[in-house]
Structure formats: structure tokens, C-alpha cells
Length: 294
Image 1: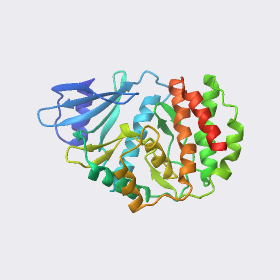
Image 2: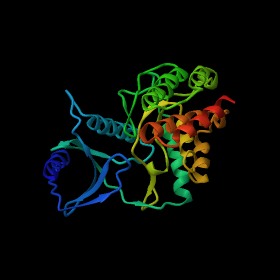
Image 3: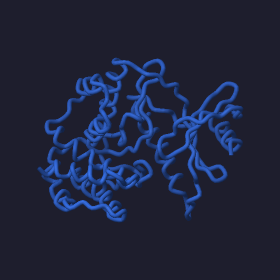
């Protein structure tokens, strides 16, 4: 397998690359991650099983293709650092995605301030096609539907919460106020947000700083939507340092009403966690729904 990946890297970069060492590193909850090195270069590789091969691509191949396109689109904004894509494909029974290797450090208050500023700059990048993206991608390992839609409330109702509720029903989830919530979304989302390029999965595990202190984000689930979905998710699992929010609001202040909308936006991720992991996420989602409708 590594020989095939070696050849692909060599063909893309125009520089011979032969793996002489590999070590396991974090690849997130879904994938295996490796640092692979030659005598002169190091790359980060994500691996996952490609055994679910259908008539064309397996789910994980689609997932890696979408991630590569997302990183390239984010990089093209020239705003915030993301890992550069080297190549992706399949080798034996594994799908792989090869990225630039970044040495990560701890960062400081200035790093988080810059992360907020640079994320805000990325959010200024918009689309004239509507809310959505050029293809479906994944949120974790769950398909994420990105059909172009001109109305944000409609998009969020159908392709975010509505789709997650459909999956949850198949899993046996019980959400008594589901219909009431979906019916209320047009009244809950009346602010007509800009169509911003969003990261889509911006929790603390997908943001970091390089050893030089430069902020970097990775593992995106991008689409064009309300920029507040990114800010809301940064608050979901403990929150980012205060400097991040200060930097963001210096560049692109949040609209009034964000504090009420953020629970609605984070419900998407809690429903997704229920669909992925089950457990207490069902009761957490129901508490959030009650809070939203109160």
C-alpha cells in the first residue's frame, strides 16, 4: 500500500518520495492518521477502509474527495491556513488522503485572536448560487446534503435538521416536538444571512496553531450558509478562548439574535452525534428543542 502512495506523491510533486518511516498519529474519530517520512519530506495521511465499493466510488472515497475539494476552496480564499492537499486515491483495500504535514504547537492569545480574524475574513467569501455546495459531503461519517437552495430557512429545515431527524427515526430516536420545531424554523430564521463559506464542523479538535503560532483549521464539512453555524459550534464543547471571539467580532460582528439562534444551529450536531453514537445525545437534543421552542 505505501508503495502505491509513494508513487502517487512522487507523480504529483515531481519529486521522488519513498517512505522509510511511518507512525500513527491522530486521524480523528473516523479515520486512521499517519505521519509518513522519507529522508527529506513528511506528509500526513488519512486512511480508511474502501471495502464499501459500489458501482463507482466507495463512501470513504467520496468523503476524501470532498474534503480535498473543501480544503482547496478554503485555501483559495487566501485567508486562513489549512493543510495543502497533495493527493488522494485508493491503494489495495484502503482509501487515502495525503496532506501537507504541519507541526502543531500550543499557540497563545494572539494566535486565537488571529484565528477569529482570519475565520471572519473567510466568511466574507460568498456564493451567487445560494445556500449549499457543489456536492454532498460528510459530517463525521454521516452524509451531509448540500443541494443548492436560495432560502436559508428552507435549506436548514430540509437538508440539516430534517435530514438528521430522518436518520434518527431509523435509529429509533424519539423527538416528540420534531414537527413543531421544523414548522417554526421560518420564524426562527428571519435574519436573511449572507451566503458565507463555512467550515461546517468547527469544534476545538479541528482548530489548532502551528509551532510558530499561526492558526490553522482542518477536517472541514464545508458549504455556503449562515456564518453563525461555525461560531455556534465553537461554543458547543467548551468554547474557544475569549481572544477568538474578540478577533472575529473586530472583523465581522455577529448579527443581533445570534444568542437565540446558536442553540438551533448546534442541535444539528447533537442530532448527528445521536445518529453516530446514540446514548444520551437523544435526551440532550430534546432539551435543546424545548429550549428553542420556549
